[in-house]
Image (tube, rainbow over all chains, first blue to last red; front, side, top):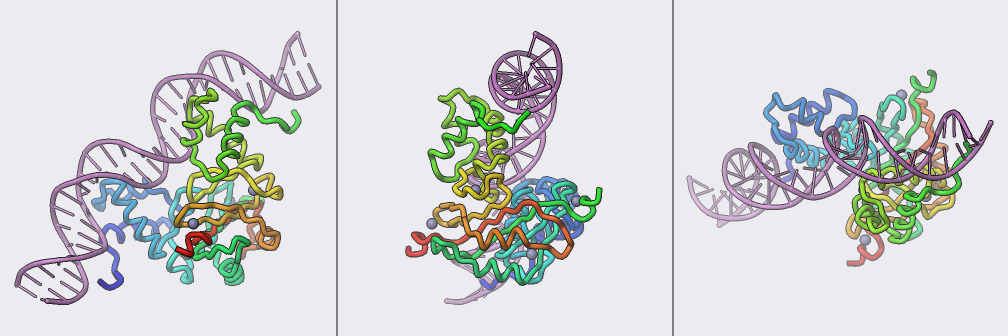
Length: 132
Length: 132
DNA sequence: TGTTAATTGTTATAATATAACATTGTGTAA
DNA sequence: TTACACAATGTTATATTATAACAATTAACA
Ligand SMILES: [Zn+2]
Ligand SMILES: [Zn+2]
Ligand SMILES: [Zn+2]
Ligand SMILES: [Zn+2]
């Protein structure tokens, strides 16, 4: 079977909603908001999320247990992700910095481990929240 | 009140256990293993974990919902953490690389956000698992 | 010693995620 | 076309992770 190029029904419903809200959103919040589309159970959401993460359409913000649409055409397979997270307003942005990603892709640890993926989360105050 | 320099009873029990096992461990697994010391409820564990993370004695491996003792005298306040994680055997090591930490501490994103903390998780295969 | 904050104990519950199993759809090739 | 394999779905139940709420106790300090 060839690599799937179209999303399944549930996958598309979940992705559409995540792209629409345009900010990190939690699985059960997605569930509540797509019930009118016929998705009834957590598993239906989690299965769609798993696939969407796998193909790089969305990312999981691990420290928040939340999911966000990918804004970066460079990370289509979710293997090199970086985010900035405001600890005050919880705004999250995907960082797209070629120098940073190059640095991290080439990083070699002392134990000689071979990496194929990384996730980086920066925390601080966004511009708006810094002023207050 | 001055900054606490000694751990409380529950904090010490939980830390002792995490340091003993010397690998990432989950909250409820900690709970099961410290019940003989008198800790009976999840909250007692989670409260101790929160404090230990805050003071940098342990770190949370976000992608695994697990906790591990700090191996790096440089990150006593848990503000700059990096880990390598084997996706096969789940071995986790704390990365202590001054060049990496310097690079990340000084990283400035395009939105002008001021960072005060980061967490980086690398995934791959450890040396042992690469051979197989 | 009185005051304040930190810590503890306890019960209940919220929030996040997966197991198990039966069924249906979809692409591929004989 | 039909048979096969695999992906996706539907459904119920349950596992796992984490916090709310409130009362009681302990530790630090002026
Ligand atoms: Zn992305
Ligand atoms: Zn903010
Ligand atoms: Zn550390
Ligand atoms: Zn390994």
